[in-house]
Image 1 (tube, rainbow, N blue to C red):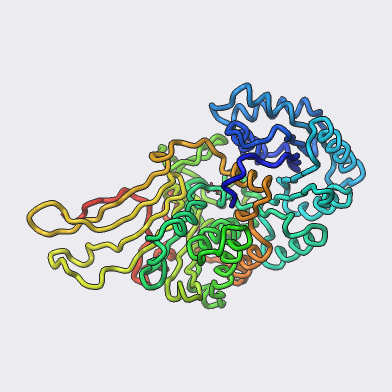
Image 2 (image 1 turned 135 degrees about the vertical axis):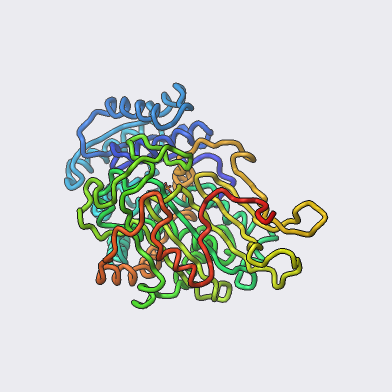
Length: 524
Ligand code: BG6
């Protein structure tokens, strides 16, 4: 990861799917924020490509409106003007190579000439995954994909990257027929999150944590990505995907690998990803019995939670809960759907560092609160020195890495409660990103786009990582497909998921750390 290059390489960003939601909510605001913070070169342009026919001027007008809405209060005229001067649009049918791709070629040539930009292009595929390979092939066929004359050509692909091992392999193979692996940037927006990146710094930039970060000291690890909202307007996609596919082989496995990996020999992209992929490959394969025993699925029924409105902010702040529909009553969801909206797994990582240390992971929609965190639970003190403190009152030490909504790290330990008698209470030492560094206006895509423009693929998934991730979850998907759930819906909207997820830990004598108000000195 570079910490020296401050400005992106001169280049053109070509967005396929330029009139879609991702472009207006994330991509434009992210480039805008980069420009505002001085990370964009003047020799830069954006070419939007969409199905709609539209003039560049019309596209700019839309973009201005979108920036005002999604770049927040910070959107100022100067930077909007900067954007307008370098934004273009071309429209047409993605399946018609002749017209659309010939127009694109002419436009790219003209844009580069007019703005004195070297012909470095990066293509952002904000389009349905079944078009990825086709569009990449057409770009290459039209002479716009090959790296030559010292110019680079890079391709960013959004998730989902395949829907199981076989389809991911096929997609990788199709792309690798026309591109080199080092041109392919498979994006996972979790790696754009500040605390997720900080995991590497926390672990490998400090000397005090790494010595205890192993099976000798760690009892188990819990990773939660809980969402308060339901499927919103994405029922069509979600009903064919489900919680496991949507979140686990991508976002959650990124968290698992960064938590569990060995120190890389350097921070160059392949050294980091080599260590990540070893963790994915070390995940103990699920036999059909394991899939029944160590994987839990759930689907939400109706209940009280945050109602969806198009402007719903994803927040943990209390909103007045209202009655919300069951998953099966959501738009574009089948009335007898068997799709899971919750998944929890007990993973074993078969290596020397983590043998016998379970990694419990869970994710779900319509949960009690919005909370993503990694909790490292340490083993208890070996004997009870403080005889007046009942053993069940003493908690394990833990390090909690809060990813959202509030980013930070908490160390949880025991302290003496003031007074003449020795009694222990549980206390927290907190590091909060906003308190220390102030509030950053960010979409989470800034770092990832910047890295692509400087050619740093550390935070992007390699083909072998994607395949190893699918390989780990495919046996569970197979069993769930073969044996449809009989008890759906099995958790109430606004709860912590199905009872079986609690049982998964309870039978090991453990309990999920649910984000609830903590009692700091609880044995008074
Ligand atoms: C997406 C999933 O990749 O991640 C969504 O498709 C999910 O279903 C989203 O809501 C969660 O992202 P975040 O950044 O809000 O945690």
